Image (cartoon, rainbow, N blue to C red; front, side, top):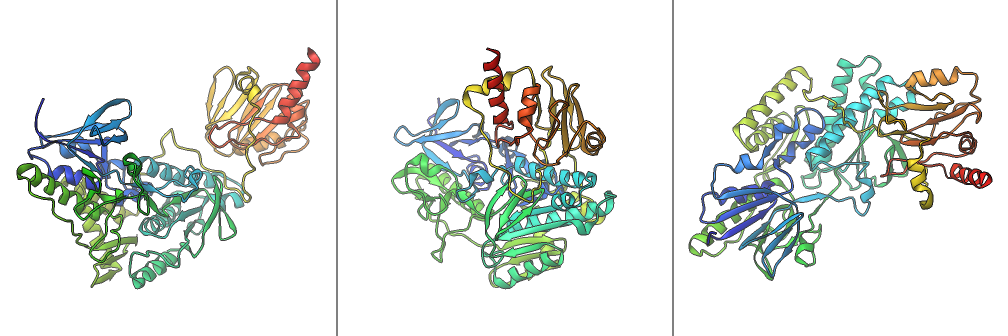
Length: 563
């Protein structure tokens, strides 16, 4: 057991990693806690989402990043609270961790402004998983648009919506339009580059509010020149997986990306204090928290004011400078009792890229735009990567993409999420099954389901779905048809009275049942067929299964008659 001071750092983002490195080789035992095993260079995460880079290009294992210092340890753990009296950090499924000094650097997440149910439809760009989901949806939307015969569906699939006109939204919109038009022109035979429509929605009066107005105007013009549909002063009112309602207009879309604001982590709740605006912890100039000696906060978690009296922005350079400063302060405090010095932020410039050969760079007194700003943006971001290996990898990948116009990370893996169904009208509200019948519905051996991209029979046989636009046909000898084959098979069969390619059930009861749509569940049996013909299958958001209530009522009536 050591008597050396124990420093616990929660979070290994820009701030936490910088603080840990500054404490490397010090007289303290330092423990870094993070629920992920890697540190992520988030300013380039949008390039993972648009297939320009792979996740490994911008992610570094935390242990590798800190491995050179023997006094630094890393544990993969999720923090659930802080016991300030016992001076313990509480962990999920692990014993509490004691501390003498605690650094809270837990970062931020996207703020959906009270509409957290939108997150499933519009992922942000904070994690590798979110970037991969966006990339999969983009690439799959091109694939599905290539396959469909419906011009309206193709147009909707090739409409991609970005919400938020800050740096993330601007960079994402520019990258999406470049990705789509480059690969559509080269690799797709039935699509045209001009079919692609990227919509950038900003509720405020202009883009890039943290930048001077002339740079924001340049970014706006550059996006518009690239074909981005920029909508200023337009507020998102609602969304579902198939579209966005903004400014009173519904936009059917195959992909939605959220970049409209951030909020700090739940650290204020751990300490039991009222947070500042943006759910951030109030801190003093030396990053201490009033009433909590030995506990510090930095980065997006902390609400600290600059020399001008305004809150410091939630930027990587702020977090990194704070981490370096606090680490040096703690090192001196532990070594010889040197008091903590206040932090002073030095703005080294603010930048955003619009697209190839177009960026903006604000140094305060000097401003850059266009080619020069773009080259400088690239140099700065390469330099800020965690090590030489990453700098070389990213530089080579960028050079290849620049010379060939071909992004190199366009693989769609087998676990890719389904592409949302663009809809001209919002999806109908879900119909919840009666609780007393839920078990019998789910477990009945007559159940056939089309779920999570797979056709599942009660015999547990699975058949992969190639075309997301599927039709499920149940008859006396159930078959699975897909895409155009399904349409031809069904419409070419005299047994069917009528086919409606929507979420409606239409059939002749004595012959079978057709279901068109996603995540639908049907029961075999003639009585259920009859009842289902007058019903609409509705998708239940998170459960990914549905039930026709009228059909269940019919089944109950049949059971009572039999009894």
